[in-house]
Image (cartoon, rainbow, N blue to C red):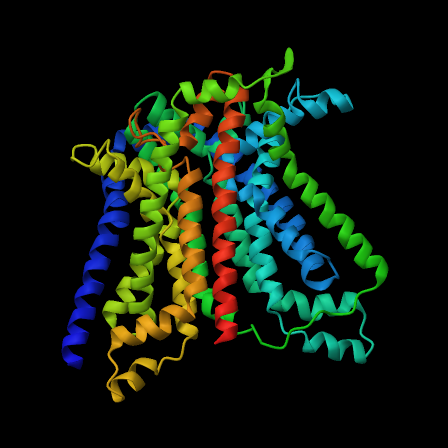
Length: 531
């Protein structure tokens, strides 16, 4: 019986590994194989390329520094200070994650553009486009990721060293230098790599607000979509793989080390009333800032033509649906539901097989499962074009489902992998001793114990599939286009009002889904407490 179970497990591992190799590694290999010496020479000798590299690195470094600094301060305020309604702040801080990056650029134009709302009210002069515009939009876009990662790190920090330091009369500054910084060093490096990679590979914000300040992703987009130069696009795609690959390698080597410092003894430390007040003010400023793009969309979506005709109207709503918003919304929902359902099943199964068994096949599957985390969506999109454009899959809804499943596979897989590693590893062996089959142990014990993680995995797949633009930009057509692709289309035609309404639609769907997942998680938590 045991031999049969092991054989089935090995077969499933092999099938999943082959699928991930075909879905991730094969497209990248195809993209790199099509790079010719002439393409390589033409791109690498182009002054525009090195100008784009310099622009990408400088603006990404500046935006990463600002985003991580503000996020770290917010994470310290929430985890160390007495912040009322902490959950509300966490929801508000995560709000920018629920809309496409291109919408953040558009929101900045609405607020601070030449005819922006705040520009006119405050009398601000100067151009928003270029370096600082991209940096500001990238900070809006990346802040939630930085905050959630840092807050999660600080939430589980052992507070007993701080209690001992207080008893010994050690100052807060010395505590920070001697306790906090050593604890944060390796996790913070992972946050820096993750945020920098996220910004440097994004093309939504630079495309909207970059102007003549061209970055590598925008250059790649122009080469492939505008000029149909797939060879040049492949070379730029290979360059964009470098920061993501470095981040992937670093995280692989430091992941286990970083986890060893998480201990169970946590409690809120005593902080002075002045610091608590300042922390609340700072968190309030973060909430207002996070709301600004949403408020600008609400304002813009229901005026006739800003700033010339400020009369309230539903024209932008009817215009969006006349241009196909209803059909594209249906496409997005189909893609998101299919990706979320199939993604949860496949990633959870892969995580169970790698976390609950050992051997070379488990290691191979684990490596294949986390590989996609090092591949930017825009690179994966062009790789899929080059591999699948002569197949029946190209131009169908299926390829959009596949590319989103592949693009977002690694993070939910790691959620499940980490959760399953915390479940007692002897459950299956005890079950076999008592005559209880492995399937019943999984169904009745392991799945209920990790139900909250499964809900989070489903939510992650769904929300990201609803708002992604980078991977699907090269693969969608008029028939299969998702709703998110209407935003750059409207912006290109200077119809910012309709683009704002589409952004609100995506935000409404994602907020609704996030709320439903929160309710389900609450029910599951209460059920566990009752048991």
